[in-house]
Image (cartoon, rainbow, N blue to C red):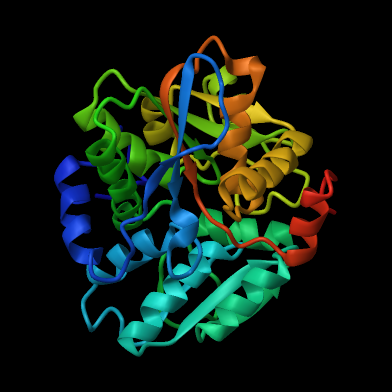
Length: 327
């Protein structure tokens, strides 16, 4: 399947196949209640921050490599990533003994860059606009190896969808799932799985006010460009909805819930204090949405927040624990 052509879901059998491909290399992460009472809601946390690389990205990267031949992998792999997918790809490439190169935006956090290096990834740092160009064109001139797209690769999306399988297995009567939205690869996989098994469930994206191209696009009915501003919520958000992802996300996402930077920072603090969970901004954003009164008319019953990752710089975590918006 080529996501450059219109399609509106990820086949369920691709997701179940991905489960078999990656089950020995991932953690089947727990689904636990949020230790915070909200009338009319039972909020659960899907703790992908507990994966070996601290992020769900290990799933999609692992499935992508499992679907490639040794000939395709002979020169190694490369990707464009703000940090977490790069770690997932580097981890899986190291397991296979192949090189991994990563093109990162110049605002990528130090914690994630150091982790990429520890896992054996070689880093090329470029301005954000150049990085976004690689995301859009699926190539970086002069780079050897097979390019693995962090969002649009169907095998990556199917790997991400295994999260949805686990959610429904652990909570068969789930009503709502909230996923952070970066490029759409996570929510497209999760929604494809959840809605195949639980047809009445709602799956919402979550974006932050400084990077909300999906909400804009859904409101306008077409892929649109947003005035992106970099923030401590580095694991999600971008300048626009990728044209190749629009058929998927417009069909699979019920809406996008936009939260403020302060709400995200408050949720980082809440998760640490109530559940002893360290979440990066993108992961905590889903809890911010679940707790926000702005969305109380849509969010009720059993709500699952995907805590997508825990790779937050220590100084930013400290600022959030102090009640500040991390800088």
